[in-house]
Image (cartoon, rainbow, N blue to C red; front, side, top):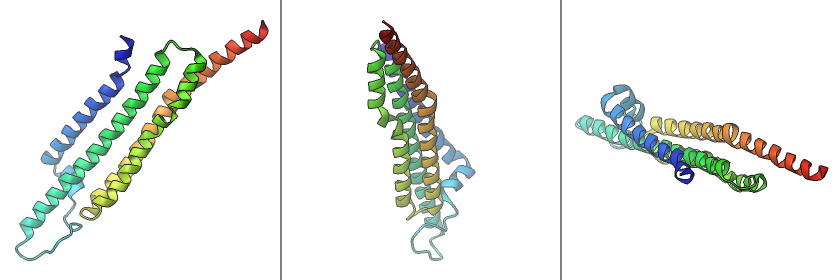
Length: 183
């Protein structure tokens, strides 16, 4: 039963991610503020403009805004999944019946998992450069928010889960070594 529960954070992250994509899509369709945030005023959209292209320009701005919103949402969902994977790893290590020394080694071995949100944030920033060609306003939003979310999620994983568990395991391992030395 404990093994199936260790996937619960990842499953919750995927559900939260799907709910976020649905909410963002709903907000884009129903909120002029969110639509303006991702579509902008249309001034950053590349292409020829003539007197008859006002409707085409608006359709293009809406389309590029929708693409930008989906890229932003997908990167945010990847952040949630990375965070869920990190909490799942911590949960499996914490609840395993292994020795504290082996748990410490597993924790050190899984260190890269806690940096994945930072890498996803970097991926979002690089993706924003691609978006910049058709929507400069939303590209800045994607770049800054993906980096910020990556930093926050990585810090949460390290400061609230990784560090306390490692500190606890070091204390347990240190106490067992001291008891062995006293004999």
